[in-house]
Image (cartoon, rainbow, N blue to C red; front, top):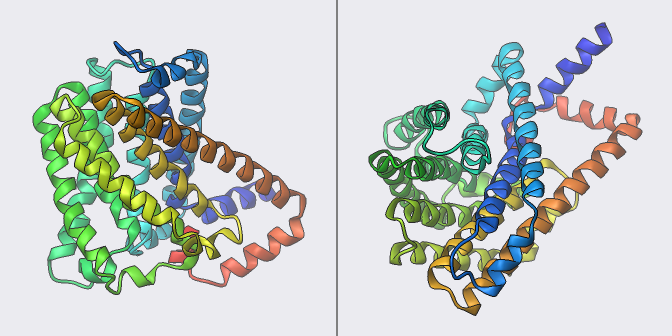
Length: 359
């Protein structure tokens, strides 16, 4: 019994909000599948390919995402109860605090992709409030620190992970628009897009906050195109069509995606050793695929649907690769306890929560 308690305590100490990258990836993939298999009139031949995906497969994916996110959430609740000082350290960390948005974003994505709850039901509305209020509370705290006096000015703490705060508002806006709550949707969208513009300019200037990100966390750079992708999808949900503003945001995200993938050396160090940071590749790709699906639905034609097909397939393959690699390395770590023990002892010599702890 004592050994089991020590084992659980060890897991809770090593667990952190960065693991919610896994939930983000699975939940966004479920939403993508729901979007793609949803039948539309006069669908292009390339779009009809996705209608052959069995609804059972989508339900299984959604169930996997739900169970994974539920497990991650329960672990983090236990971490809050038994190791609250570590959670506090995460909140004070300029990178770690952004991942406190991740569980709420994941639940909102999962809610939108649910095959069991309609957006018009009272249950959907109640869950939207439960998942959105924490995002707004974090907004008040973090955005307030960005422009008021203190040591956490945006120019000193800005890093690519800061875009998760923006994405939280955009996902909440999209969910509100699906319910027909246009005013709430516009409110959250305005908060997200205004701070995105400020953050985007700050990150482009490469001030001190950008340079504080370790090489192992460079997959987080993919969030550069996740934010405009989600903004295009959210504004499309508000307006009811993928208009000019949505297209501009989509083209921006597509350009940023191509800019990053054309520089593989940027991610060379982060790919030398597997870490949970690798999961940062999946969600942005899925967000871009979601935007491409909406773009193809509006514009039609071969090229938009070809882009949608390529991005959606790439998104699914990356997710599958990450699942298999995670299982492999987790199994390998368990089969070599001496190596695992050495790794854990070396980690414990550092601070409990640092930027590297989110690797």
